[in-house]
Image 1 (spheres, one colour):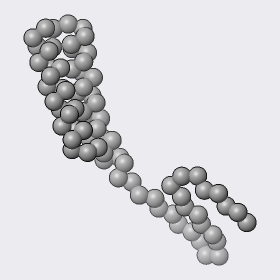
Image 2 (cartoon, rainbow, N blue to C red; image 1 turned 180 degrees about the vertical axis):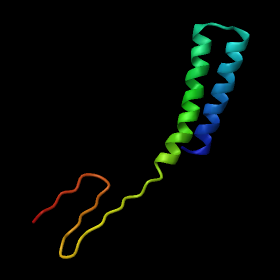
Image 3 (tube, one colour; image 1 turned 135 degrees about the horizontal axis):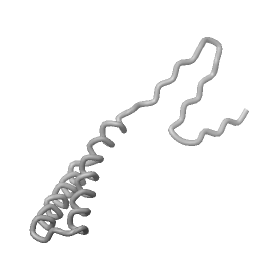
Image 4 (spheres, rainbow, N blue to C red; image 1 turned 45 degrees about the vertical axis):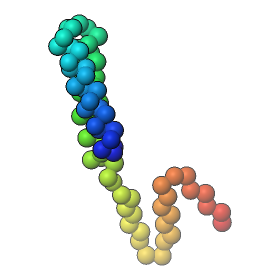
Length: 74
């Protein structure tokens, strides 16, 4: 995720945390927990999406590698 999205998530977490401190309740605490989970998940997701495609092909073979659907017309 981009820096701006993480910044917005952080600000949302701070706002929900302040809400939970000022007016404790099921809804405010749940919002704080969900925003914290989303913020932490954005860091985990960023590390997992940095995967590149890799392919090993033997001699006398044809390999087709595509990021989406591949149509082969022979």
